[in-house]
Length: 268
Image (cartoon, rainbow, N blue to C red):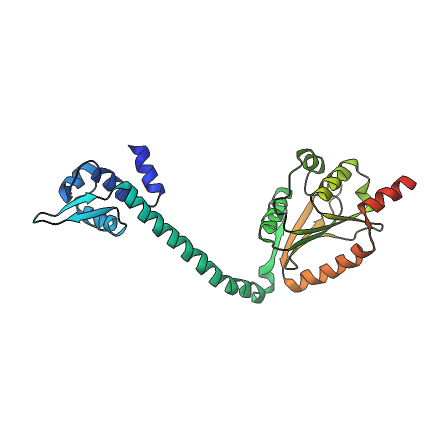
């Protein structure tokens, strides 16, 4: 019984509504007093609960001198509840679309410090990148250099697929770590997933990821001796993102493709 009550609650009924409906289906009709005793719901609340069930299409009031109530069959009642949920879902989606322009405009017009987020733990940096990628619609570009927030060897061993195949990915790596065998294996996997990889023959000054030319995640190496600690900084500002994108383009256009770099490496 408790399991069925929980299932009724999961489809949108309150606990009292679920208990009352479960009691109703046990007999053709009940008075409010009978229902109150059977469902163990206070008599002062039973009428409001029955009214709610009637409005949801799960209960009906029978004509007569004595007020009696009857359950609507589960098949009919739940189809009505489903219709109400679908209508509510459509309304939620509609209002979300209507509110989104106001949210985006507010982000652009907010105080400068409100769109700067500092992240200090590697795990948190990785989680933030995943969150930003989920809301990205068109393109992700990145300039990469060690130390990395992710475990390179673990990534290529697990061969985690790219979730969003509709995005364009462009990654640029510097020479300082490109000969790392683990990194090379990972880059080969990236290329198989459609990522355009290039190798810069000069040192990369800073590493960052740009999401749709709107948000930037900067990774800054902490100047702490004998550590590889990094600090992440998320900046949600389209002007700043476009500035870094121009910097990325300068390096990317003159860099070697991964295939070109491998050929050059063999010649050397």
